Length: 338
Image (cartoon, rainbow, N blue to C red; front, top):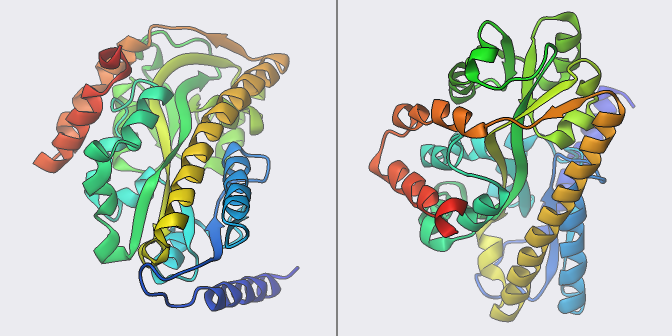
């Protein structure tokens, strides 16, 4: 299909979605289809959990509500999807933490490498209204969407072309690929490496050719992109637990009856739990795939890396509100809870 034809098809899709998204008075909507934009494939844990949520909604509301998930950036990249949710053309979307940080800097408190100990800690914090309630509602007036919570992106670690990484000193002089942002560059430097921003699609070739010596990600991405073929040494630095957020058009959310909103919330809670289970299984499968392809996974003292990254909070948290969110999240850490 030509670029012009693809654009035309996408435009027709958006027109159809807009026609489905009629203007609603709060508390009056007796049923509808919720269209959800996603940048992952149909085999990804996010798609599977969200699709199951739609089936749950349809069953529990006797067909009044359902969720249609549009994977593979069918409705556009995340920045475009956020705008569509804002204007009501699309009701929901999954977007990454940095996307929301661009709209409200306070979200950086949940994006720092040292905010979360692990997935369990992360999921408890990002669904605790006493910690995130005001933050999640902060975009309602300016952007007309509400943050409902999040899906984990898993714990990220370092993998290299040259061997295991036990301390930041092992990354000295090594070029570490990161996403292009000030925080990610600072994170790479704190890990001991020379930060090298690079598009994700260029990373395999970059590792293969020596443009970069290392990268950092979760095991699922490591295996699915077959980076183990060119960087077979994985060290469990566990330096960051990534996060995706679910956003919904605020007017649409307010339009639900009390009964349907209860079903909606129950379904979302089930979807979150299923996603974690699917993610953990996908992680195990990814490790097996990478090991079969020649990768070696090393357990290292990740506390060393946590301590190296701690100063980033002082650098990037610049307001009392940001510190309040960060401190509350740290107080709810897995170690504290135990």
